Length: 198
Image (cartoon, rainbow, N blue to C red; front, side, top):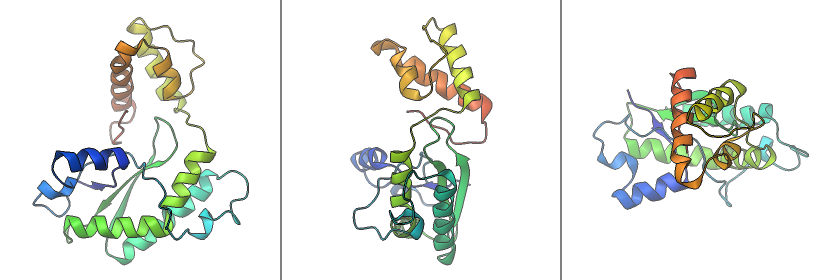
């Protein structure tokens, strides 16, 4: 069974250029593409209490982000859509890997419900969390990627903390090898997570 993912802005543009929404080519109501949750906040979105400046006064925490995920889940459930939460993205820990599943509904309806619930309860919080928290790769994944890069002859310092640091350690014409190391290491460490990079 496939799970609808809410594609980020780049994925949406690519999908539209390729010939329509991701679900447009599928005949199954639970089909879709897994992508990391990177949707930008809607300027007209109604923020949930956790996402407002009056509540989150300094730096948004993981606990506050998770409250917003809970509100998103409740909203989806009211429309018979299941939130599929794969946990924190180990590549940068700036969001959770989220998807939507509702075999009884058409793909277009699932995406419509997801967009409405995200706008009302999640997008503002997700954007604020990314703004307030610098990307940091999970230590086990970072260690595995550094080892992979060393095996390929890249000079890594061991002080890298995020994907940008890893990319900076590679010549521009070899960046794809960094991506290969991240994907390979992710599959080994997190075989059940839909981790993508970049």
